Length: 458
Image (cartoon, rainbow, N blue to C red; front, side):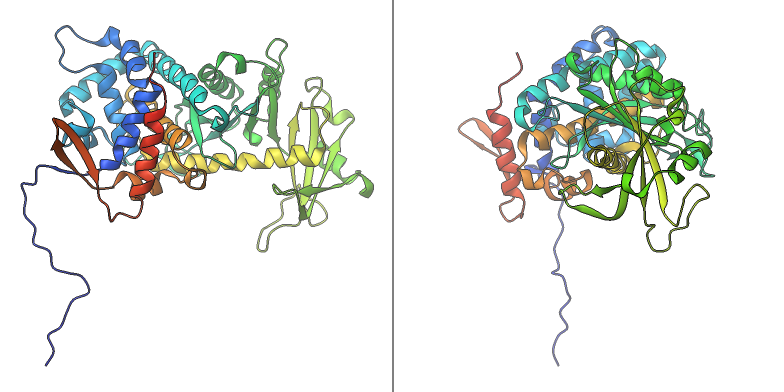
């Protein structure tokens, strides 16, 4: 009789290993922090909140929490993951010290938020210079996508309220710089709002845009080289007028609601005025056409605005709305970009859907829920989430090969950051040796080499 053999080998477990390092791939993020100058920038920004004879620097504490979130944590206590690996992450503050700093910064209000944001903007400017041709402004333009996010609350947190989707929680409005088809994106705005905040509130969109522009290099804070994209929530008179205001001159591409007036104009568009929509690869999009509306439908809107409507055969199973026509699904957007074919402008606006990918990455990086009770504390948490997302966008942009630069946070963690390692001492040097058999060790070492070759700040 044969002895049964299990599917997996039996392993004897013993504690006490000293040189073994978990999350060894996290050195990629540590080196990104160093090359971006983010550690020195945020330490200088938070210096006013450092108490006399304090052991831990407030900037280092906040960065440690951001690193923990980037590695998969979703609460302040997950900083213990870094505390266990001091050889990689350095001295890490205790949980009470972390909590006290969050309370201190929350009590400081806008002053602390402004300091953290200024440090992020400074580091972002340096990273874009280092990235050169891989930076999001390599083509001379920058695209910022604004979109709302519903964050569910499972307890009665401050400002949590019923949402328009019949859930309960908060409704932040976020902004992301689009890296295009060859990369991910990085957060540049996060406005915390109650769950019942309106989707199309113009004042909130103006505030979020101001936060986003403040994160960009100075030359992109006004002018046509900066494009603001939103869904139909941004299609309000006040917001579009603010974008087009003299002296600001921002480019915009905002979704619009199909009103009865727009619907009647669409019915009058002759067949010869419809142009076939295009795909990103330059091909014709099957079953979709675009046309530009003119006339009194533009009355009351800023001068130079173009209104472009798209009709498309609905997907199987999709239900038509009252504003659709002739069995076609209608969508509409407004832009102030002149001299370009409407099919090209419609494709540019349709690519705003990449913001949904950025939101999915944010949910997987600390935005699944807001872990703190008070709104002021959760505003600091949103800055921590943005720091983590910045690092997860900057590291691939600076160090990863083109074919893997689009990996989202979950895949980066599974394949790169969880790489095991071991510290060895030779010639009075400590060397971190990564697991040779791990399939993605080569990606980690290559990325570290690229980061090492970048110039140090200052």
